Image (cartoon, rainbow, N blue to C red; front, side, top):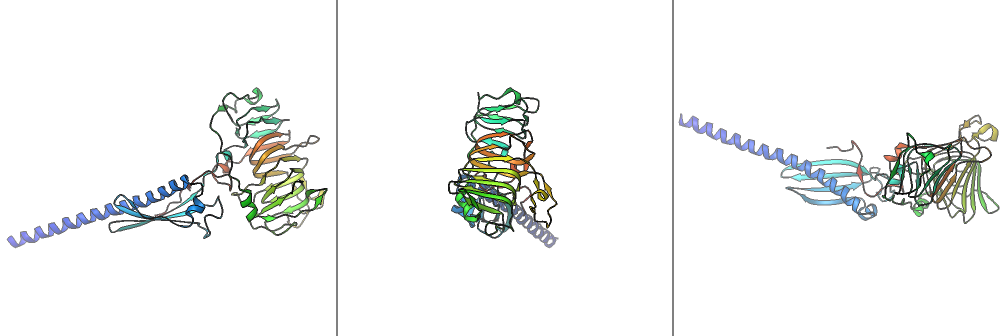
Amino acid sequence: MLSVLVVVALSAMEEMALEARAARNRNDVRQAYLCAYTGIDYCLYLAGQSSTWRTGFGNGDWLSGYDVGSGAVTVSVLDPDGGAISSDPADPVQLTAAATCGLAKRTVEALAQPPPGLALKYVLCSMSSADLQLKAGVRVYGDLRTTGKVLGDSDVSLAGNIYTAPGQYINPFLIDADTRLIETSLTVPAPTVDFAWYNSIAQRLTPPRDGGNYVITDARLTPDYNPFGFTSPQGLYWLDAGGGEVHIENAYVIGTLIIINANKTRVRKGYYHTTYATKYPALLSDSDIEVEVEHNLDENGRSVDFNGDGDTNDFLVSRIRGVIYSTKKVKGMQRETSPGPFYFSGAVIADQLEISGVGFHVAYDPQLAETPVAGFQAPGLELIAGSIED
């Protein structure tokens, strides 16, 4: 009997020891997971504290053996496409956190991207305190943002709220059932558009000149077709106007135009333009932009195969889809003699804005509130929904 009792007692002690070790292991596994998640959160915090995190931290370990509670974590940050994370300000990054606690080891992966800048929350965003003007029956669908007055004619249609500084004048015609005035002292940070970076990755355009001005007319410009130079896989094209004007007339563009050192950029007649990649804008300029669209893009009327499908039978409604940005003024979107039709989808960001034309429809693209655009991203990183994998 005594021998039996001894065996039972030893078995019970062994079972209790196994249960204790199992409990510690379960706790270590949980702690390792929490340690890995904490490491990812801390890297997101580090990115938010440094405007130069892409070049300052670069590819590789942002944390190495970093103590978190009773565990330690190493977090490696890489471009998911295998490139350098410093190569593009809008690219997502992959974070891999390897954590240990006791004998437990766990790895957690997550994707993060820069959040969109505040200026991309609005269909029209004026960066200065100059008047934001809506004229001649233009139709606007989306919120406006400025720090100055908002002036509008009685025939203007606005479906969206107006955000401006307290005490600024807003034309009463603009306030109705679907438009509220929201006063805010919050300043919209200026976009961090790096023209030099865009020029370094874009292909140069060499269109013909007329009296000192560059002219792009009856032309197709896409990632695989450039009549004015080499092609760009991302549809990124830049033009140094050298102080002259740039006239774009009856053109079909898939990609991004970067125009620098221009006296003025004029978009006229028929025009169809959409970005090739959502992470890039449609039109960038450090000069005034005037859009004076008069009609649609008629292949048969111009005897030009604008979209490259092998015929001249297409009739394309004039439009721009993407972000338009000017460090100075965007004016028009009209032609006084025959305004429109013209459809714009995206966001217009400029120092000053004057938009008009009864045939013009300016609508916000809600995708911009979720997807960063290079040069228009907010500092730091945020997790992409559903991207965490254990």
